[in-house]
Structure formats: structure tokens, C-alpha cells
Image (cartoon, rainbow over all chains, first blue to last red; front, side, top):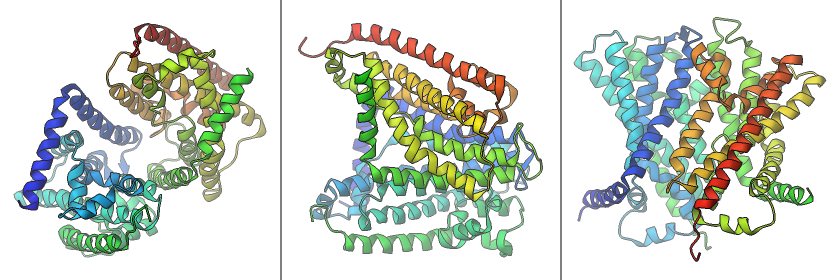
Amino acid sequence: MSTIAIYARLVRLQVRSQLQYTTNFLMSVLATFLFTSLDLATILVIFSNIRTLGGWTAQQVLLLYGAAASSYALADMLLGSLDRLPQLIREGNFDSMLFRPRSPFFQLLASDFMLSRGGRLAQSIIVVIVICTVYIHIAWTAGAILVLTVAVISGAVILGAVWVAGACISFWIEGAGEFVNTFSSGALFVTQYPLNIYAQWLQATVTFIIPIGFVIYMPTSYLLHKAPIFDMPSVLRLSSPLVAGAATAAAAALWRSSIRHYRSAGG
Amino acid sequence: MRRYLELSIRGYRRYSSYRSAVIAGLFTNLVFGALRTAIMYAVFAHSRHVGGYSLNQAIMYVWLAQGLMTIVQMYGNPEFAMRVRTGAIATELTRPIDTQGAAYATDLGRATYHSIFRGVIPVAVGVLAFSLPLPSAANWLEFAVSLWLAATVSFMLLFAYSLSAFWLLDYRGVALVAVILMNLLSGFVIPVSFFPPWLRTVAMWTPFPSIIQTPVNIFTGDLVGAAALRALAAQALWALTLLLLGRALFSLGRRRLVIQGG
């Protein structure tokens, strides 16, 4: 059986078992839905006091928020179980994944699929669609829609690559797992606001080193005709898919070398 | 009284054994403090005052909120609800000590530990990095009282909604709604004074601003004299109301409690 087929089967099993507890499932969907709305409320409250933030209007920031949250939610649906890695290592359960005839990475991803994380995805996609159709007055040509769709998908890949790289820390430093969460939630926070409001060093870091600036900010600022940061050529902001590819390759290399370095908690 | 003091000391010691969690938590506080400060700079780019705050006060707000969040358990604590759910609460009912009082005493020990190790550092970093003015001596006493009341309100609220585990198979939905409301309405993610008027009115009728907004405003000197005393009185009133609500729910809940084995 192919890896994809096994993944599909494992996911289907988990979804079925989660749907057994209907009320519980609906509650969790509602919960993730509401939790993302907290960031939405924050932005709305900010804009009840000011007109523009770093030159962006409320509607433009909301587009940024919705698209970034969609990328995050997509990455979270597929890679959410990375959160469990520090615990698996600490309890020695990661070892059993090394014995089985599939890659440990695949096993980790298939081990904890939570359909309720879809609540977040649904909320952010709704925000994007409402904002785009009602408030953002640019010509929504097929090209523009394509740019946004590709941005959300490559954004998810970039975020995923950053998480994988972050999760690798737990192979090298014991107990560092708690820091990993900060990377993912911090990344979400950074990508939800216009990058140009942050200090130069932070802008440079998230553009050239940890490329989460390309998650949504770059393509969106291109779509909305904003001035590019660091005076980069305007179209370079559409290179998110390339950045996503490079980030994935780097994360994969780091993961492989980390696994080779791994020594079981049992010594 | 002696027994409660012992429980507080145990609560303090228990948390002091998780040092790596403290370091990771502080790291998170510093990252989010810096990011939220950047947002504040952008918010104040075109105006000197927003929601009645100056830029300095808003930055102080951000770092104080980071310092307070662990003390008041901004993201809740499933411990007590789990005790109800698993039935471990039965053991507590056999003890010759008030359950709510014992849990409160233990939690005050935890809050004291977190005040020292999770509260001081973020505030100190904010003050030093952005050269913020510290409050005058008179405010410190009022702030100390307000901090204690904030921890109390937050505990009494947590205790009360944790008791929903007596009635619900899965209390997590209730806990999550409470956490989300608390994040927004306490002024943790964004100051209450930034709210549009209608939302501010909603918040003011809930206990949540007593948990973050009030102690912060007292620290920054936004509330002084009679206004500060009124704010402290409001905190005390919420603490008492929630304390009584918790007791009422607990006595109702224990009548429903059926532990296996009779």
C-alpha cells in the first residue's frame, strides 16, 4: 500500500472516531473558530482608534489577517501533530516509530489528525472571502485570485517548513520543546500585521533568514500596490512558491540530520 | 489558618520545581512583549494619545500584561476540574478543611511564585528597554493590593466555572469560552480603554477588567486616590461575588456527586 493510501486510511479512522462524540466535536470546532476570532477582535478594536496602521487600512490588514490565518490553519491541519514530538521523545515513544517500515515523519503526521482544527480554517477563509468581495476595491481578475490562492498555499508550506525546523530542536536539546510553541504562535502573530511596522532587524530576519515575511505579507503588498520593503524589485514579492520550495528543502535536510543525531531518551 | 499557610507554601514549592517551564514561559513573554510593543508604536504613529494613553503608558501596559498573565492564569488551569471529573474530589471532601479555601490557599502560593519569577522580569525588561517611568511609592501599596485582588478574582472565577464538571461530561467547552472572554474583556490582548464605547460598557459589567486592566491602571498611575480606591472596591466586590457563587455551585454539585463504590 502506498504511503498516501495509508495516510488517507489513518486519517479516515481518526476522523470517524472523532465524529463518534458529536457534541464534543462541534464544541471543539466552535472553540477553534472563536479562538481565531480573538485576533480578529483585536484588529477591529485597534482600528476603532486609528485609521491606518503602517499605511494599511483596516480592510487591508483584515485581508492580511485572514489570509495569514488561512495559511496557518492549513499548515496546522496537516502538521499539527508536530506539537507532540517533544513528549514522544521524552517518553521514549519516538523509538517505536523508528522500527516501523515507514518514515518517522510520516508516522508523526498521521498519528494525530484532528478534524476540529478545520474550525480555524473555515473561519479564516470566510474572513478572506467576505473582506475581498465587500471591502477590497481592486480588480479581482483571475490573476489576482491566483496570486492570493498561491500565496495562501505557499504560505502554509513556508510555515510548515519553519515548524519542522523548529521541532528539530527537540532532537538536539532536551526540554526545548516548550520554545517551539513560541515560534509557531509568534510566526502567526508577525504575519497578521503589515511587516513594515516592525523594526528593521525583525523585517530583515523574517525576509532573509526565517522567511515568514513571504507567507502572506509579500504577495498581498504586491496585490495592494504597496511600496516593497528593502527596495526589492516589486515582482520578487511573488516568489513565495520558490521560497516555499527552498524552505522545505532546508527543513527536510535539517530533519534528516536531526534524526541521525537522535539518541533515545533511554540512553 | 496555619493549615492554609502550609498549603500556600506547598503551592509555591510545587511550581518552583519546574524551572525549564519558567524559562520557556519567560521567553514567550519577551517575544510577545516585543511584538505587541511594535504594534503600539504603529498605533501611536499619527496620534499622541490613544484611548487616553500616551505611548509610554501603552508600552508599560503591554509589559505589565505579559507579567500578569501567568499570575492570573490567563489560559486557565484544568487541575481542579480534572479532580471533579476523575472523582479525586471525593478524597478532598473527607478532609477536615474547606475545599474552596484549601484550593485558594494553594493557588495563592502558586501566584506568589509566579509574581516573583514570571511577573518581575517581563516588567523589568520593558522598563529598562524602553526607559519607562516607574510609579511613585504611594502607588506600590495600592498596586500590591490590586494584584492580590486580581489573582483572587481570577481564582474564584476559575473555581466557579471548573465546577461545571459536576454537570457536564466535558467541561472543556465552558473553560475555553471563559478563556477567550477573559483574554479579550480583561484587556489582556488590547487595553479595555481602546475598546469602542459599547464593548467597554459590556466589559465593565463583567469581572474580567478586574483581572488585568485595574492592576495595570493602578501601576501606571492612571487610577489614583479616590478613583483607585473605587477600583479596588470593585475588584473586592467581584472577588466576593464569585467566591459566594463558587460556594453555592459547590454545595449544589456535591449533592450530585456519585463516586463509584457508593
